[in-house]
Length: 111
Ligand SMILES: [Zn+2]
Image 1: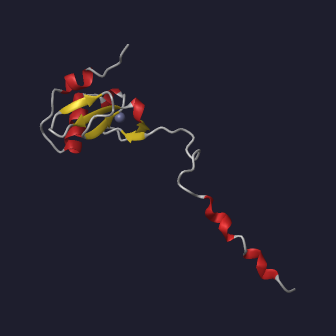
Image 2 (image 1 turned 120 degrees about the horizontal axis):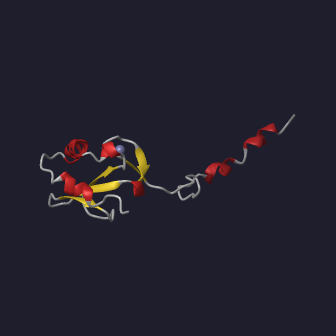
Image 3 (image 1 turned 45 degrees about the horizontal axis):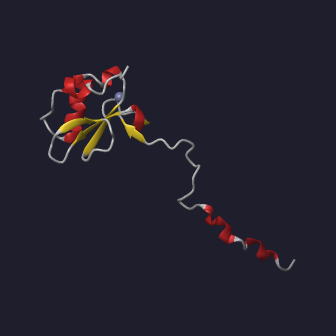
């Protein structure tokens, strides 16, 4: 019964969790929250509305415009101007919104 304490030796094996590890998330989708219904959805399924640094509010179909972005999903109720208006006002903290009919229409179903 002598050398039992040797068993705790390989502590260094715990070092496997580094951040560069791929494969923990099987899909690499970026999730964003719909500003109206607050569901988390893949970015590609959402329409991005952006407020640019000079205060213009635009539909951003590239997803790459500068500014603060807000996302809307494709649910009909999340594209209703009155709901969108409320969400945008809260997110952008402004009362000054463009014509939402125009804002929302040019991104519509491209079919
Ligand atoms: Zn929604």
